[in-house]
Image (cartoon, rainbow, N blue to C red; front, side, top):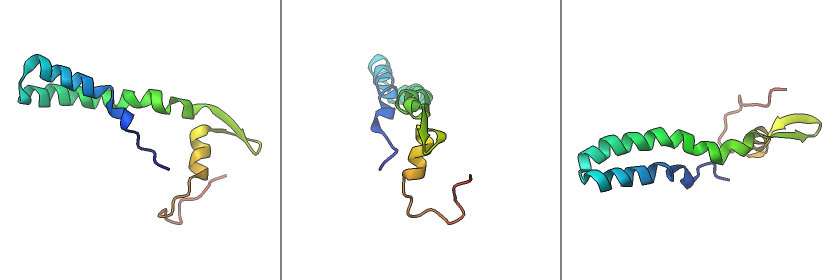
Length: 86
């Protein structure tokens, strides 16, 4: 399972392309477009990861979908001190 989605780059990429189209200057595109790309990267995740905050009842315990996925996801390289706190 992979928690990295390429769609997080979709909101920032058209803005960066638009800056390049309007200015035709690599330096301005790097500064302005790169800054806009970085500012839109975090809000771009909201639509993707928003449904993971929905409530879920699993074995009589109220959890969010992201908590339940984290409990089920087997992390082979995790140190032993990471444990389920009940």
